[in-house]
Length: 152
Ligand code: 4NP
Image (cartoon, rainbow, N blue to C red; front, side, top):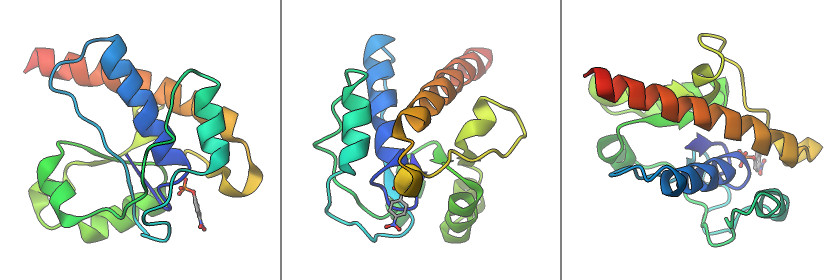
């Protein structure tokens, strides 16, 4: 899960997916989050993101912001961008054709081919709206990924 600062959207996305991995007992699923900027390296998530997640029973307070690294492109099967600016930046950084193919926009799992953004709540404070949007998007992402793995 990748956004710009790795303190608002992608930490909530990580927490939501971790929660669903447990709930749905998804074997061999692993999630992490990172930012394209590295501006908040070493910091905990934004307090407002921690509070929004806590309101839904999810603790993201122990997460630590980090910058997306080259290793992520090898290790992870999918790299999900929160908005098209993150997407473009990740595509600029991906080291091989194979790794570039791993990059997708998060909300295209909810609204196919729409290229919609998960809006950045950092400035307008709409963390709860963003949490709910991510929850819906991640639910669709899981369903589609499971369907795809069953058809392979
Ligand atoms: P995020 O939000 O990309 O969802 O973590 C932001 C966090 C910090 C900044 C911008 C967006 N910033 O400008 O520091």
